[in-house]
Amino acid sequence: MSNATITVLPGDGVGPEVTAQALAVLGAVEEKYRHTFTVHERRVGLDAIEAEGTAISDDTFETCAHSDALLFGAVGSLPAGQTRSGGPRPEQALFRLRKEFGFFANLRPVRPFESLYAASSLKPEHLKGTDMLFVRELSAGLYYGRLESVPGKPSEIRRTARGTEAVDTLLYTEEEIERVVRAAFEIAAGRERKVTSVDKANVLSSSVLWREVVERVAADHPTVTFEHMLVDACAMRLIRTPADFDVIVTENLFGDILTDEASMLTGSIGMLPSASLGARRTESGMFGLYEPVHGSAPDLAGQDRANPVGAILSAALLLRHSLGLEQEAAAVEEAVEYVIREGCRTEDIGEGVHAVVGTREMGRRIVD
Ligand code: GGG
Image (cartoon, rainbow, N blue to C red):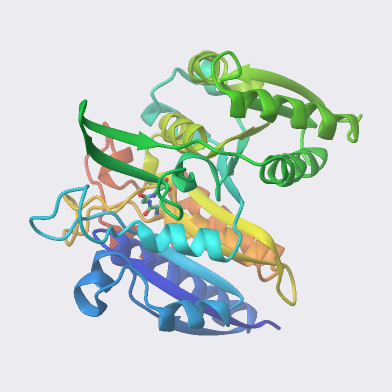
């Protein structure tokens, strides 16, 4: 029996709607398998900026620190009238959680369901056998660069004698690369034993260092085959021959972009879950943050239209990685696959289906 503490951070836009369905699924797991999950719900993103003046308060951070796992919805909607270049940004909540808890590896599995091949951007013959896992570096790179001119700031827009200019810095230490690459090789050893390392080594110095580190780590894993691939080539191969990939490891921004692209193989970005992990352990696994890959989609918010599957599959990853509940995680994944195989569709995956269901109904059927 598990007695776990989970902090839930629904966030903005469709975040609260999809998180509510993931929580309902965790409730069903609690009941069926006789676990006790203590759930604390806290504000993040725009919701927190409006109520508490900051994207994530110190109080909320403390609550997270005393949990076994964090279930996150989505953030991204800006305060009314605010532009991207000024004021607090909702995403700062995510970036602070990732950085301060040391979540350096973001796992994003992409496995199109056969019953959804028709919703995918590709033909079934190209999708057959596709089962890949992205390991996205999450706590460095362009998201956290270090400006020489303004210590503590990763980027700025500045007015100069030459006119207005903007600067972002892409910085990786050897250690930041090595820990995520090692994680990828270790995971690959338990899968199909193949790592594709994605970079832009023909242009970027950070990618040249990335390659050096990958070769060193690969030498410690002789049973795992590996290849280097340029990010532009990878973007193409994901569409041409997706079944060729097993584990893909890459830096922060490339991982963000490539996983949105790969989500189209599953039919919708609403299908994709993620787990962000670091070095901290819980009693039965790893401390982690779990969230759907999609953002807050403000245009869909409050209309019962969002697909909750990415959030529900994220809850399954939480059960597996943070609580060590493999059987329960597999049961949730099977329930999702069953419901979709039976023809239940939200509108994003509902092409050609007459009766699509809403967020709540999709969640209810998975719980059932
Ligand atoms: N659930 C994911 C989410 O809310 N994403 C919003 C976002 O802006 N994320 C930044 C990133 O992951 O790169």
